[in-house]
Image (tube, rainbow, N blue to C red; front, top):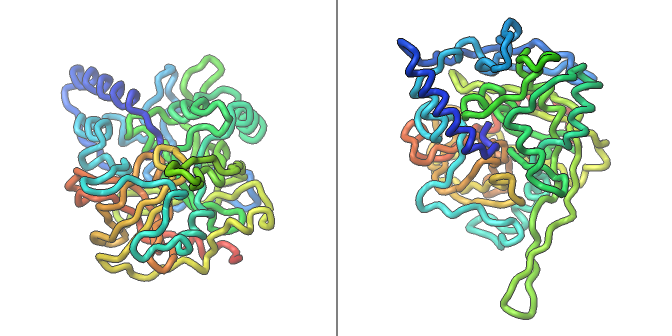
Length: 395
């Protein structure tokens, strides 16, 4: 999961790996399989069964495990190679698939309140996306406990690395770890790897898990279960107000949060034809959030040429809303690469906007300093999500 800032967990993962490697005769590299997860399709708490297209986040292991130590989230990942662990721990190498970065020469994302236009992007061009951009974060510990017990019958659990986000802010906002877009009045689009147990594991983190009454590991939580623990934070940004003196003062916007009601669709795979998205339904009526929705009519499924101007409005490191502007460096199949648009952990799932104010892609990961990703940050064309979006009722 790209959004979580877990440097200490990454270092612990490296130590663990080195110890394990010393006692192993041979560590073989992972052959990452495209696992199809369908174990809890009707447990979403929404009217229709959740559509889980695919993803390399199998949840089949662990039920036979009796110790309190959780196994990797996939059968294939039971013996990860030393290269994979080092790659994920230090945000480099071919397995660091979703880490975020600011490439050399690129400007860091700036607060949206300070943005006064850049190139073809005027304040008016980005206004709709700015309002629709939300921060994905965890609900309160009390609410999470209620949801797991009453809606899923889970009484014993460990939130793992996601649990570290609950106490980041005494205000109750919680720590954000991904970005999303209110695509319809009660529907948010974001990146699928944000709730992928395997992605959390590959970053050196601890996926949330269900425990037995004695604390022993039973299984990892499913994307459906994790999604219900989330909320969308609106207007989490700083407003800049000029005064009569040269100084500029900042004030927080009137932010508010809306809990997630259920997972509509989830897909995450980095092999073959990559997909990385989740579609969330919020606990609000369509009328209550109608003024914030970006709208399906402003989506452009067409081709974006190299050199095209792009903008990404995001919540890097879970911070107040920011914007970064740059150009499309290159394309490769479904992927979009951009080296001069800075992103960080928490930016995953942010919409990619073209100069006409149309949504053309979904930011999914970083790759600065990583030749495997063209030394650039990247996203997926919005056309990869077209089937999911076309299934939604239009505004």
